[in-house]
Amino acid sequence: MLAAGRGRRMGGAKHLRPLAGVPLAERVVRALLRTSAARVRLVLAPDDAAGRALATRIGVAALAAEDPDEGRAASVRAAVRAAASDSRGALFALADQPFLEPDDFERLFDAFRAEPGAIVRAEYGGEPGSPVLFPADCFAELLLLRGREGGRSLVERRRERVRLVSLPPEHGRDLDAPEDWPAESAPLPSAAHMERTFSIVKPDAVRGRKLGAILEAIEASGLTIVATKMVQLDQPKAEGFYAVHKERPFFKDLVKFMTSGPVLVSVLEGDDAVARYRKLMGATDPAKADAGTLRKRFATNIEQNAVHGSDSPDNAQTEIAYFFSATELVKR
Ligand code: ATP
Ligand code: MG
Image (cartoon, rainbow, N blue to C red; front, side, top):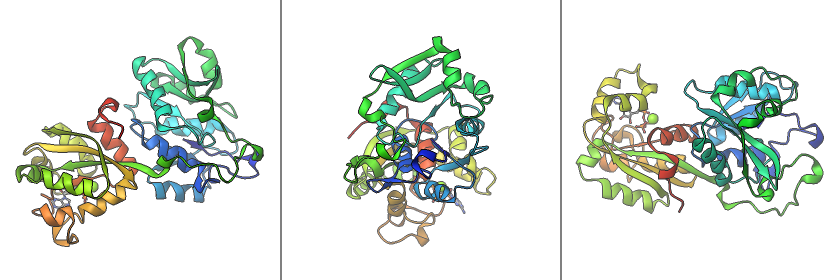
């Protein structure tokens, strides 16, 4: 999500300007977090402390544009440099298109999955526009962009690879100048604060037949289950999942435990789902967990602690993609 512009025509950075109470950048990031994208990154000007605070608050990683005064190319390069080596492509969304819905982005991802070599571009009423999704084999060329040009020159050079996806024109509206700004009363899509998190009911709790009680507590908390399945982790899958802990002394035991029997992996949705599910789970160590939490009720010890929940929306996105394909998540 590119939000490093100086917003000259707006008389100040517009990505932080609220629309019905929610900053533009937050609206777009939250929409992206509800798609099947494996990672969402917010590209900001290097001196944008308020933007970084926003990224921290909503739980996505921020990247600094290489030169904020150069124009869009510096942001595109920062995003491409930060892309994972296994990334199949990158979609460049803009902070000033706050009306795009998760489904709109998903349609671009679907078109890309149907034809992985394609450059996928949104189109509104026959006019090509943003966002644009570039496959990884365009990354080297994106790194050569300079100045105010976004990917446009590349799109023109590779015209034969471009696939247009028609989206509702009212969703694609961009807010460029003060006169584009809708009246204060503009409605806020109810999904603006909707978040997803990833849950595992660990082997101890599955073995102990606590599945029903845990799912019941999840539903009673108001979180909605939008995907779930029972899986048996093998060693590489468990090691990959807990890769951040690979230097920790408990890593080997943790992997052994996580592969010791089937687990239930689920995707939960709701306002502030990440924080709410962490609260429902309780502290990592059940001895320190509050009364009524899942770990207080069902965990055995700090390792065999019944449940996992993502610790940020950013990690939730990665963890969901590690276990689920886009088509396995339902709308409720
Ligand atoms: P999770 O990531 O599983 O939701 P968490 O975020 O509360 O739990 P982390 O610090 O990420 O805790 O640790 C991951 C998992 O590793 C813990 O849930 C637990 O199973 C295990 N673990 C953490 N600390 C220890 C420890 N000191 N000894 C043994 N196992 C541990
Ligand atoms: Mg953790």
